[in-house]
Length: 391
Image 1 (tube, rainbow, N blue to C red):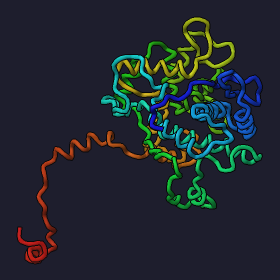
Image 2 (spheres, helix red, strand yellow):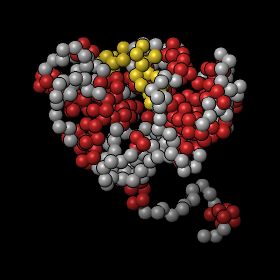
Image 3 (spheres, rainbow, N blue to C red):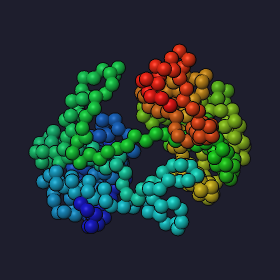
Protein backbone atom coordinates (compact mmCIF):
# COMPACT_ATOMS: atom_id res chain seq x y z
CA UNK A 1 0.00 0.00 0.00
CA UNK A 2 2.94 2.37 0.67
CA UNK A 3 4.65 1.42 -2.58
CA UNK A 4 7.55 -0.41 -0.92
CA UNK A 5 6.74 -3.61 -2.84
CA UNK A 6 6.77 -3.60 -6.62
CA UNK A 7 3.67 -4.95 -8.26
CA UNK A 8 4.00 -8.22 -10.12
CA UNK A 9 4.57 -7.78 -13.86
CA UNK A 10 3.11 -11.12 -14.92
CA UNK A 11 0.23 -11.27 -17.34
CA UNK A 12 -0.59 -9.07 -20.31
CA UNK A 13 -3.40 -7.70 -22.44
CA UNK A 14 -3.51 -9.51 -25.78
CA UNK A 15 -5.53 -9.02 -28.93
CA UNK A 16 -8.45 -11.39 -29.22
CA UNK A 17 -9.18 -13.64 -32.17
CA UNK A 18 -12.95 -13.08 -32.35
CA UNK A 19 -15.17 -10.09 -33.01
CA UNK A 20 -17.02 -10.61 -29.73
CA UNK A 21 -13.77 -10.32 -27.75
CA UNK A 22 -11.22 -7.99 -29.39
CA UNK A 23 -9.04 -7.84 -26.24
CA UNK A 24 -8.40 -10.32 -23.44
CA UNK A 25 -6.23 -10.70 -20.35
CA UNK A 26 -3.75 -13.59 -20.07
CA UNK A 27 -1.81 -14.75 -17.00
CA UNK A 28 1.91 -15.46 -16.67
CA UNK A 29 1.57 -18.80 -18.49
CA UNK A 30 -0.26 -17.20 -21.41
CA UNK A 31 -3.63 -18.66 -20.41
CA UNK A 32 -6.78 -16.62 -20.86
CA UNK A 33 -8.31 -15.25 -17.65
CA UNK A 34 -11.86 -16.44 -18.25
CA UNK A 35 -13.66 -14.24 -15.63
CA UNK A 36 -12.26 -11.14 -17.29
CA UNK A 37 -13.13 -12.39 -20.78
CA UNK A 38 -16.75 -13.05 -19.87
CA UNK A 39 -17.06 -9.55 -18.38
CA UNK A 40 -15.44 -7.85 -21.39
CA UNK A 41 -17.65 -9.83 -23.75
CA UNK A 42 -20.70 -8.62 -21.84
CA UNK A 43 -19.43 -5.03 -22.05
CA UNK A 44 -18.99 -5.35 -25.80
CA UNK A 45 -22.52 -6.73 -26.16
CA UNK A 46 -23.62 -3.59 -24.32
CA UNK A 47 -22.32 -1.60 -27.33
CA UNK A 48 -19.11 -0.21 -25.87
CA UNK A 49 -16.31 0.47 -28.32
CA UNK A 50 -13.33 -1.92 -28.68
CA UNK A 51 -11.07 0.81 -27.27
CA UNK A 52 -13.22 0.94 -24.13
CA UNK A 53 -12.90 -2.83 -23.90
CA UNK A 54 -9.11 -2.46 -24.14
CA UNK A 55 -9.08 0.19 -21.40
CA UNK A 56 -11.09 -2.04 -19.06
CA UNK A 57 -8.77 -4.94 -19.84
CA UNK A 58 -5.74 -2.97 -18.63
CA UNK A 59 -7.55 -1.89 -15.46
CA UNK A 60 -8.51 -5.48 -14.66
CA UNK A 61 -5.00 -6.71 -15.47
CA UNK A 62 -3.70 -4.30 -12.83
CA UNK A 63 -6.29 -5.59 -10.37
CA UNK A 64 -5.33 -9.22 -10.98
CA UNK A 65 -1.65 -8.35 -10.58
CA UNK A 66 -2.52 -6.98 -7.13
CA UNK A 67 -4.33 -10.22 -6.30
CA UNK A 68 -1.46 -12.34 -7.63
CA UNK A 69 1.03 -10.30 -5.60
CA UNK A 70 -0.86 -10.75 -2.30
CA UNK A 71 -1.84 -14.35 -3.25
CA UNK A 72 -5.61 -13.91 -3.04
CA UNK A 73 -8.08 -15.53 -5.44
CA UNK A 74 -10.43 -13.17 -7.26
CA UNK A 75 -13.46 -14.89 -5.69
CA UNK A 76 -12.10 -14.13 -2.20
CA UNK A 77 -11.16 -10.48 -2.72
CA UNK A 78 -12.27 -7.97 -0.07
CA UNK A 79 -12.11 -4.23 0.46
CA UNK A 80 -8.61 -4.69 1.88
CA UNK A 81 -7.28 -5.69 -1.56
CA UNK A 82 -9.05 -2.71 -3.15
CA UNK A 83 -7.41 -0.43 -0.58
CA UNK A 84 -4.04 -2.02 -1.40
CA UNK A 85 -4.52 -1.26 -5.10
CA UNK A 86 -5.48 2.35 -4.39
CA UNK A 87 -2.53 2.80 -2.04
CA UNK A 88 -0.14 1.39 -4.61
CA UNK A 89 -1.53 3.63 -7.35
CA UNK A 90 -1.16 6.71 -5.14
CA UNK A 91 2.50 5.98 -4.35
CA UNK A 92 3.88 4.13 -7.40
CA UNK A 93 5.48 5.72 -10.46
CA UNK A 94 3.68 5.48 -13.77
CA UNK A 95 5.87 3.45 -16.13
CA UNK A 96 4.37 5.20 -19.18
CA UNK A 97 5.71 8.53 -17.92
CA UNK A 98 9.28 7.37 -17.52
CA UNK A 99 11.59 9.95 -19.11
CA UNK A 100 14.34 8.52 -21.27
CA UNK A 101 15.68 11.91 -22.38
CA UNK A 102 17.77 14.01 -20.04
CA UNK A 103 16.77 17.56 -19.25
CA UNK A 104 13.31 18.99 -19.55
CA UNK A 105 11.04 20.15 -16.79
CA UNK A 106 10.56 17.95 -13.72
CA UNK A 107 7.27 16.04 -13.38
CA UNK A 108 4.48 18.03 -11.80
CA UNK A 109 6.07 21.41 -12.53
CA UNK A 110 4.63 24.19 -14.70
CA UNK A 111 6.06 24.92 -18.12
CA UNK A 112 7.10 28.62 -18.01
CA UNK A 113 6.45 29.09 -21.74
CA UNK A 114 2.94 27.68 -21.95
CA UNK A 115 1.87 27.92 -18.30
CA UNK A 116 0.62 24.35 -18.62
CA UNK A 117 1.37 21.77 -15.93
CA UNK A 118 3.74 18.92 -16.77
CA UNK A 119 2.30 15.48 -16.06
CA UNK A 120 3.24 14.09 -12.66
CA UNK A 121 5.38 10.97 -12.33
CA UNK A 122 2.63 8.93 -10.66
CA UNK A 123 -0.90 7.91 -11.55
CA UNK A 124 -3.51 10.64 -11.94
CA UNK A 125 -6.60 10.69 -9.69
CA UNK A 126 -8.77 10.12 -12.77
CA UNK A 127 -6.83 6.91 -13.48
CA UNK A 128 -7.44 5.68 -9.92
CA UNK A 129 -11.15 6.48 -10.16
CA UNK A 130 -11.40 4.70 -13.52
CA UNK A 131 -9.68 1.60 -12.12
CA UNK A 132 -12.10 1.49 -9.19
CA UNK A 133 -15.06 1.80 -11.56
CA UNK A 134 -13.77 -1.04 -13.75
CA UNK A 135 -13.22 -3.37 -10.77
CA UNK A 136 -16.61 -2.47 -9.29
CA UNK A 137 -18.34 -3.25 -12.60
CA UNK A 138 -16.43 -6.53 -12.91
CA UNK A 139 -17.66 -7.81 -9.53
CA UNK A 140 -21.18 -6.42 -10.02
CA UNK A 141 -21.41 -8.42 -13.25
CA UNK A 142 -20.32 -11.68 -11.62
CA UNK A 143 -22.48 -11.07 -8.54
CA UNK A 144 -25.50 -10.93 -10.84
CA UNK A 145 -24.78 -14.56 -11.83
CA UNK A 146 -23.96 -15.68 -8.29
CA UNK A 147 -20.19 -15.75 -8.75
CA UNK A 148 -17.45 -14.11 -6.73
CA UNK A 149 -17.65 -12.60 -3.23
CA UNK A 150 -20.97 -11.65 -1.66
CA UNK A 151 -19.83 -8.05 -1.10
CA UNK A 152 -18.25 -5.97 -3.85
CA UNK A 153 -14.60 -5.22 -2.93
CA UNK A 154 -15.03 -1.65 -4.17
CA UNK A 155 -17.34 0.33 -1.83
CA UNK A 156 -20.45 1.69 -3.50
CA UNK A 157 -21.29 5.37 -3.19
CA UNK A 158 -24.97 5.25 -2.31
CA UNK A 159 -25.10 9.01 -1.62
CA UNK A 160 -24.12 9.75 -5.21
CA UNK A 161 -26.72 7.36 -6.61
CA UNK A 162 -29.42 8.91 -4.43
CA UNK A 163 -28.42 12.43 -5.50
CA UNK A 164 -28.46 11.70 -9.22
CA UNK A 165 -31.61 9.54 -9.20
CA UNK A 166 -34.84 11.07 -10.53
CA UNK A 167 -33.32 14.52 -11.02
CA UNK A 168 -34.60 17.07 -13.48
CA UNK A 169 -31.93 18.28 -15.93
CA UNK A 170 -33.02 21.86 -15.12
CA UNK A 171 -32.08 21.50 -11.46
CA UNK A 172 -28.62 22.11 -10.09
CA UNK A 173 -26.98 18.77 -9.17
CA UNK A 174 -26.88 18.24 -5.43
CA UNK A 175 -23.65 17.85 -3.52
CA UNK A 176 -22.64 14.46 -2.19
CA UNK A 177 -19.70 12.98 -0.39
CA UNK A 178 -17.13 10.94 -2.22
CA UNK A 179 -17.27 7.19 -1.78
CA UNK A 180 -14.62 5.46 0.25
CA UNK A 181 -11.27 5.00 -1.53
CA UNK A 182 -12.37 7.47 -4.22
CA UNK A 183 -9.80 10.23 -4.88
CA UNK A 184 -10.52 13.89 -5.53
CA UNK A 185 -10.66 14.33 -9.29
CA UNK A 186 -10.01 18.01 -10.09
CA UNK A 187 -11.98 19.70 -12.85
CA UNK A 188 -9.42 20.74 -15.42
CA UNK A 189 -10.15 23.88 -17.38
CA UNK A 190 -9.33 23.63 -21.11
CA UNK A 191 -6.31 25.63 -22.22
CA UNK A 192 -6.07 27.18 -25.67
CA UNK A 193 -2.79 27.81 -27.46
CA UNK A 194 -2.11 31.58 -27.67
CA UNK A 195 -1.99 33.01 -31.17
CA UNK A 196 1.72 33.88 -30.96
CA UNK A 197 2.71 30.41 -29.81
CA UNK A 198 0.43 28.86 -32.40
CA UNK A 199 2.26 30.70 -35.18
CA UNK A 200 5.61 29.51 -33.81
CA UNK A 201 4.32 25.94 -33.59
CA UNK A 202 2.90 26.01 -37.11
CA UNK A 203 6.21 27.35 -38.46
CA UNK A 204 7.98 24.27 -37.03
CA UNK A 205 6.03 21.88 -39.27
CA UNK A 206 8.46 20.27 -41.71
CA UNK A 207 6.26 19.31 -44.66
CA UNK A 208 2.91 20.02 -46.31
CA UNK A 209 1.36 16.97 -44.65
CA UNK A 210 2.16 18.22 -41.15
CA UNK A 211 0.97 21.74 -41.96
CA UNK A 212 -2.26 20.42 -43.47
CA UNK A 213 -2.85 18.12 -40.49
CA UNK A 214 -2.34 20.86 -37.92
CA UNK A 215 -4.46 23.36 -39.88
CA UNK A 216 -7.32 20.84 -40.08
CA UNK A 217 -7.08 20.16 -36.35
CA UNK A 218 -7.32 23.78 -35.25
CA UNK A 219 -10.03 24.80 -37.75
CA UNK A 220 -12.33 21.79 -37.35
CA UNK A 221 -12.08 21.09 -33.62
CA UNK A 222 -12.11 17.35 -34.37
CA UNK A 223 -10.58 14.88 -31.97
CA UNK A 224 -7.20 13.36 -32.81
CA UNK A 225 -8.38 9.88 -33.79
CA UNK A 226 -11.43 11.23 -35.62
CA UNK A 227 -9.40 13.35 -38.03
CA UNK A 228 -6.85 10.60 -38.70
CA UNK A 229 -9.62 8.39 -40.08
CA UNK A 230 -10.72 10.83 -42.80
CA UNK A 231 -10.63 9.35 -46.30
CA UNK A 232 -10.61 11.08 -49.67
CA UNK A 233 -14.36 10.57 -50.05
CA UNK A 234 -14.89 12.26 -46.65
CA UNK A 235 -13.62 15.63 -47.91
CA UNK A 236 -16.37 17.96 -49.08
CA UNK A 237 -14.40 20.56 -51.03
CA UNK A 238 -17.42 22.65 -52.05
CA UNK A 239 -19.06 23.06 -48.64
CA UNK A 240 -15.77 23.16 -46.70
CA UNK A 241 -16.28 20.26 -44.31
CA UNK A 242 -14.91 16.85 -43.40
CA UNK A 243 -16.89 13.75 -42.48
CA UNK A 244 -15.57 11.98 -39.40
CA UNK A 245 -16.69 9.04 -37.28
CA UNK A 246 -17.64 10.68 -33.98
CA UNK A 247 -16.10 9.24 -30.84
CA UNK A 248 -19.26 9.24 -28.73
CA UNK A 249 -21.98 8.13 -31.13
CA UNK A 250 -19.72 6.37 -33.69
CA UNK A 251 -21.86 8.01 -36.37
CA UNK A 252 -20.47 9.66 -39.48
CA UNK A 253 -20.87 13.39 -38.86
CA UNK A 254 -19.62 16.54 -40.62
CA UNK A 255 -17.16 19.01 -39.10
CA UNK A 256 -16.25 22.40 -40.59
CA UNK A 257 -12.81 23.18 -41.92
CA UNK A 258 -11.32 26.51 -43.00
CA UNK A 259 -10.47 27.34 -46.64
CA UNK A 260 -6.83 27.74 -45.58
CA UNK A 261 -6.79 24.19 -44.20
CA UNK A 262 -8.35 22.86 -47.42
CA UNK A 263 -5.64 24.64 -49.39
CA UNK A 264 -2.94 22.95 -47.30
CA UNK A 265 -4.73 19.61 -47.71
CA UNK A 266 -4.88 20.05 -51.50
CA UNK A 267 -1.15 20.89 -51.58
CA UNK A 268 -0.39 17.78 -49.51
CA UNK A 269 -2.42 15.53 -51.82
CA UNK A 270 -0.73 17.12 -54.84
CA UNK A 271 2.71 16.29 -53.40
CA UNK A 272 1.99 12.76 -52.13
CA UNK A 273 -0.61 11.66 -54.68
CA UNK A 274 -4.15 10.47 -54.13
CA UNK A 275 -4.39 7.54 -51.68
CA UNK A 276 -5.63 4.21 -53.03
CA UNK A 277 -8.36 3.81 -50.42
CA UNK A 278 -8.06 4.30 -46.67
CA UNK A 279 -7.26 7.52 -44.80
CA UNK A 280 -5.64 10.46 -46.57
CA UNK A 281 -3.01 10.87 -43.84
CA UNK A 282 -0.06 8.58 -44.67
CA UNK A 283 3.49 7.99 -43.50
CA UNK A 284 6.32 9.53 -45.51
CA UNK A 285 9.09 7.00 -44.88
CA UNK A 286 9.25 3.36 -45.94
CA UNK A 287 6.15 1.59 -47.14
CA UNK A 288 3.20 3.96 -47.17
CA UNK A 289 0.63 3.17 -44.49
CA UNK A 290 -2.02 5.08 -42.53
CA UNK A 291 -0.72 7.58 -40.00
CA UNK A 292 -1.39 6.36 -36.45
CA UNK A 293 -2.24 8.46 -33.42
CA UNK A 294 1.18 7.82 -31.89
CA UNK A 295 2.96 8.99 -35.06
CA UNK A 296 0.82 12.13 -35.24
CA UNK A 297 1.50 12.84 -31.58
CA UNK A 298 5.23 12.45 -32.18
CA UNK A 299 5.05 15.05 -34.99
CA UNK A 300 3.79 17.62 -32.51
CA UNK A 301 6.20 16.50 -29.79
CA UNK A 302 9.22 17.14 -31.99
CA UNK A 303 8.04 20.67 -32.67
CA UNK A 304 7.19 21.46 -29.04
CA UNK A 305 10.54 20.12 -27.82
CA UNK A 306 12.32 22.57 -30.12
CA UNK A 307 10.25 25.45 -28.73
CA UNK A 308 10.29 24.40 -25.07
CA UNK A 309 6.51 23.88 -24.99
CA UNK A 310 4.27 21.02 -23.90
CA UNK A 311 1.17 21.37 -26.06
CA UNK A 312 -0.64 18.21 -27.20
CA UNK A 313 -2.91 17.24 -30.09
CA UNK A 314 -5.99 17.62 -27.90
CA UNK A 315 -4.96 21.20 -27.13
CA UNK A 316 -5.64 21.96 -30.80
CA UNK A 317 -9.28 20.99 -30.19
CA UNK A 318 -9.33 23.20 -27.09
CA UNK A 319 -7.91 26.05 -29.17
CA UNK A 320 -10.58 25.68 -31.85
CA UNK A 321 -13.33 25.44 -29.23
CA UNK A 322 -12.09 28.56 -27.41
CA UNK A 323 -11.95 30.55 -30.63
CA UNK A 324 -15.49 29.48 -31.54
CA UNK A 325 -16.90 30.17 -28.07
CA UNK A 326 -15.36 33.65 -27.80
CA UNK A 327 -16.57 34.75 -31.21
CA UNK A 328 -19.37 37.24 -30.58
CA UNK A 329 -21.05 36.27 -33.86
CA UNK A 330 -21.58 32.66 -32.73
CA UNK A 331 -24.00 31.43 -30.07
CA UNK A 332 -23.19 28.77 -27.52
CA UNK A 333 -25.67 26.37 -29.11
CA UNK A 334 -23.92 26.75 -32.47
CA UNK A 335 -20.54 26.01 -30.89
CA UNK A 336 -22.05 22.94 -29.22
CA UNK A 337 -23.20 21.69 -32.63
CA UNK A 338 -19.75 22.15 -34.14
CA UNK A 339 -17.94 20.41 -31.27
CA UNK A 340 -20.63 17.70 -30.99
CA UNK A 341 -20.90 17.97 -27.22
CA UNK A 342 -23.72 16.02 -25.60
CA UNK A 343 -24.33 18.75 -22.99
CA UNK A 344 -24.09 22.50 -23.38
CA UNK A 345 -22.43 22.71 -19.95
CA UNK A 346 -19.34 21.12 -21.50
CA UNK A 347 -19.28 23.78 -24.21
CA UNK A 348 -19.69 26.51 -21.58
CA UNK A 349 -16.29 25.58 -20.09
CA UNK A 350 -14.64 27.30 -23.06
CA UNK A 351 -16.25 30.64 -22.20
CA UNK A 352 -14.45 30.86 -18.85
CA UNK A 353 -11.78 33.56 -18.89
CA UNK A 354 -8.42 32.34 -17.57
CA UNK A 355 -5.81 34.36 -15.75
CA UNK A 356 -3.49 34.21 -18.76
CA UNK A 357 -6.16 36.09 -20.75
CA UNK A 358 -6.09 38.99 -18.28
CA UNK A 359 -2.37 39.79 -18.39
CA UNK A 360 -2.80 43.04 -20.35
CA UNK A 361 -5.74 44.21 -18.24
CA UNK A 362 -3.89 43.45 -15.02
CA UNK A 363 -0.84 45.37 -16.26
CA UNK A 364 -3.06 48.39 -16.91
CA UNK A 365 -4.65 48.01 -13.46
CA UNK A 366 -1.31 47.90 -11.65
CA UNK A 367 -0.01 50.82 -13.72
CA UNK A 368 -2.81 53.20 -12.74
CA UNK A 369 -2.12 55.51 -9.78
CA UNK A 370 -4.16 54.88 -6.66
CA UNK A 371 -7.28 57.01 -6.58
CA UNK A 372 -8.10 58.72 -3.25
CA UNK A 373 -11.46 57.87 -1.75
CA UNK A 374 -14.10 60.50 -2.43
CA UNK A 375 -17.66 60.76 -1.21
CA UNK A 376 -20.58 61.71 -3.40
CA UNK A 377 -21.64 65.34 -3.33
CA UNK A 378 -25.09 64.21 -2.20
CA UNK A 379 -23.78 63.50 1.31
CA UNK A 380 -23.24 66.24 3.86
CA UNK A 381 -19.54 66.29 4.91
CA UNK A 382 -20.58 66.71 8.56
CA UNK A 383 -22.71 63.52 8.39
CA UNK A 384 -19.81 61.59 6.85
CA UNK A 385 -17.49 62.84 9.60
CA UNK A 386 -19.95 61.73 12.30
CA UNK A 387 -20.41 58.22 10.86
CA UNK A 388 -16.87 57.44 9.69
CA UNK A 389 -14.81 59.90 11.69
CA UNK A 390 -12.78 62.87 10.57
CA UNK A 391 -10.19 62.20 7.86
